[in-house]
Length: 321
Ligand SMILES: [Zn+2]
Figure 1 (cartoon, rainbow, N blue to C red):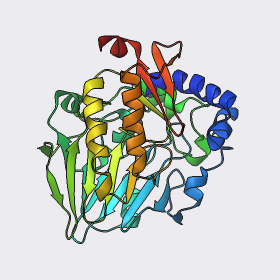
Figure 2: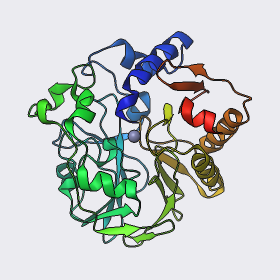
Figure 3: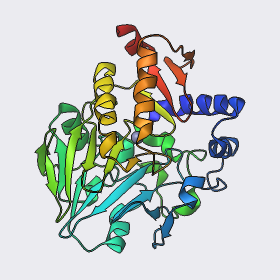
Figure 4: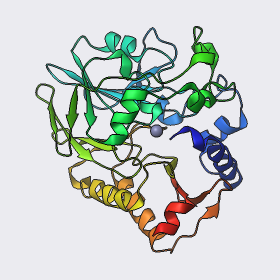
């Protein structure tokens, strides 16, 4: 998810309230105080690993996989630490509001390689803390790495109704921005990351952004899918979005289902049933074939609501089809 969508998200959440969906989202929306928001029930079912950082909540999510959740900001972004025998892969680095590298140090002493599910600001905030960073070889990635994201474009993340400052006593909200970072190795679709008795295959899933990737651990049956799928409003309206590419990508991921045990998305609920990828693919096809109509979200986007997720799509992109 990204910043322009905050208003849309609020409107959408209100709509959800009316519809009576998403029981836990309800609490998030009714309260403008993220300190009062209850944790999602899906998190409460997982085993928590206590750390010294109050901003992050860490959960065991699969074998030698930690979900590093930031539940006190409305993005509810999730980064994942995946352990091998020799190295660990950190898939995304979150909002950059608190030090994710300090949490990672508490969880493992293995050397860390960072890869981002894509380079929207909510997934690259802690990149600057690391030296070994893989990046997709796209102009979009290079631009975000070289420039970071200025305060003006992320200031809504630190507005009082967007997060709970109590968990970030040292936060300098006036200067919050996403710092630039250096990519050590540029990679492509199909790149394999060997972290020691565990191999992670990078799958290009362009659509949400040009540099979106999923990560497949075929041996474990785990797929990390970034923002290509999660339970919540899936955003397809920003600069770099491409609906035809998204369709290819969600189809590609759904074809992996026979190999999968769990899917780990980058927002909201960390552990999902792989079958939901087919639901998302079918839902997107309904939209494309105009069998499903959307509602005007009054922000340049149309909202298409399904059971556990929805699509918020830019009208400009819809009209291109
Ligand atoms: Zn996101």
